[in-house]
Image (cartoon, rainbow, N blue to C red; front, side, top):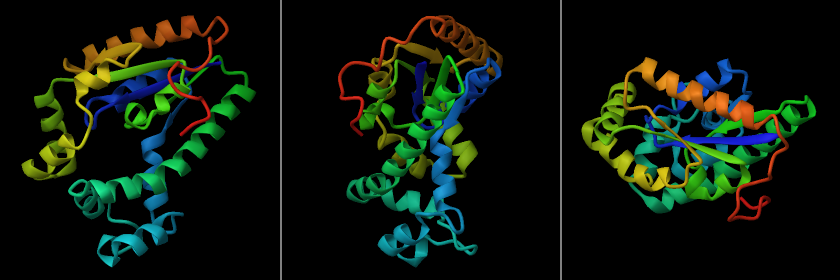
Length: 215
């Protein structure tokens, strides 16, 4: 089975591309959405995260207030590293389960969308890495518009991430989401078709550069 990693910076257009892949028949897991599940009321990480950061990160429903938590961790690299160390192992466990299940079902290709594949080195666990990019000013505008962040908060969040051009250099397939929605969807559909065609032959194994079992 061909394993696809889909990544890109925050507000770059990853979700649009993932949905196009799904419509094309590629099973996809939104790994970033798992964090919402972990932080929801009753979620498996609520108690641990609240115990570390304090009650101010807990919302009125008993879940984690992601905006308050985000302001904390993106202003402090050490706190961000702690949080990643707690969240990422749970995410990768879910990813492995998802991929194994799709393979057992006989899928020729399956993919995972996650923001930090290059940063964490987990891109090495996939046969193909698809990176979504857009112009920096678009990324800033999209992030501010959808999140309600102040301009300063949006800039801080973007500054904490890998430079998009650096991330793009790791791509096997690149989707430029700088154009209209229709143009982005057309570009994503072309990549999806190429991946499905490639998946008709046996997978060549994980990307080189990291032990596939490492996290």
